Length: 439
Image 1 (cartoon, helix red, strand yellow):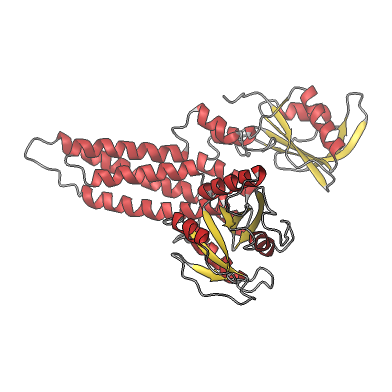
Image 2 (tube, rainbow, N blue to C red; image 1 turned 90 degrees about the horizontal axis):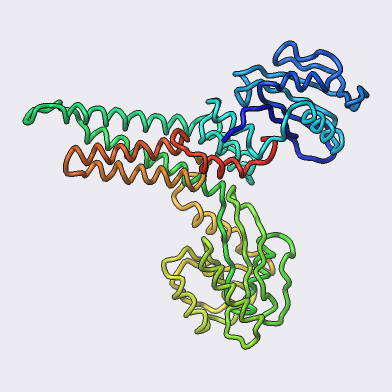
């Protein structure tokens, strides 16, 4: 539950910088700020005042800028004061300590944004868009989060909700008509329109989820196929140890890269083979586990040695999975092989074919999603939209109007969960706990 007292926190990262921002929000925010500032500043909202920060003995701690945002036109919907100290850990911490000593309490993670949600400044989809902006790992992900933050997802979800509500109303009228009579509402056409809008929105959200969460790409293959060399080549740096000794990699090694806007978590694994070495056998077990849990598998084959029986057995196990056969060592005398999946020839040593491999990874990761129009969402929000689509589709084919009405009510509740209008404290706690203190 939100505590409606006055809260304070440092809203910028601690460290040496030009400025640090301390945010105070709540009914007593202005009084708290005035107790620690030299002059009676903050009389006019949205005006920046140059003043001094004073300690408990009245000594100047720092020259600061202070600004007041009057409710309800503030980030949280409450009275908010921001004090801008010089950058540096001590100045910012001293300012925060003084605010707490004079009546504020330390804010919980995400409490400012949660208050913005509770006070109606933003809905839950926009609140999660704030988190998306903070956590964005590519410019494409940042733009997707910005589209959500500025309300594009909210507007589309509200439009779908209102249309479902209209159809529910029509059905209630229809059910009240005497038997044998009809109000002649075109419910089927209306449902088709909602289905079309939901499919379009889900496509945008699917693209946004890829940009937000990224994909895990697991590099697997027999020993000495060049898995670690391939990982180093994709990263553009030496991260994994490379030797001519089979079985050098025995543990899971992970690093991140961005491929055309998509965050990719590369995972290098131990060579797949039978081994009596306890440590290597454990590495093989972890490798198989990583492949089963990954989104895409790059199965690396030494093209100079050709396809071995162990390769064929593992490739059969990848049937139906997103996978690419990487024919490595193309700079050597490569042998022609036939594999049951898409393949690409590369040389981890010279870099030949790496751009083509990245393009194939991007295509597998994005599927048919148009990343440029993505909307930043969480897996929970996308799940709610898919539940809504399923309910509306079932309503379209329902045998009678009573069942249709019940399914539409379920669909409408799913949209409300996306907007946070039907969210309980447990869900809100889970969402806002992922924010940093000060946001």
